[in-house]
Amino acid sequence: MLHTLTMSPFRCDVLAIRRLIAVGDHVLLLEDGVIFALAGTKALSILINTSAYIHALRVDLLARGLMNQVSSQVEIISYTYFVMLTLENPQQICW
Image 1 (cartoon, rainbow, N blue to C red):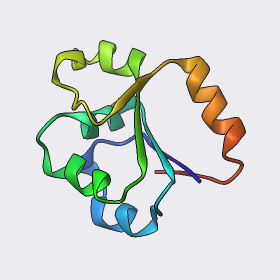
Image 2 (cartoon, rainbow, N blue to C red):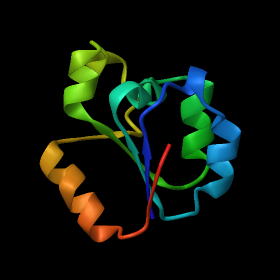
Image 3 (cartoon, one colour):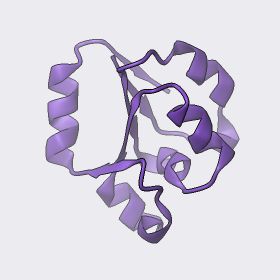
């Protein structure tokens, strides 16, 4: 399953999201959701503990000036890879 997070961790219920993420799922951080990707944050550690694959959209990180603060545990991806994730995961949830 692909989970797309578009909201900042300060504007959503991270623990509720965590309960619905299964091992092997993909989590894509985009728009203000890329704030989840910041290294050393509690929000990111909650996502990492789900054992899901965590991705962040490069253009949204660049737009917010966050590229140098992204955790090494988050894969930075392009729009092309975003499309591949949507094709590989017919079940999707947008947060």
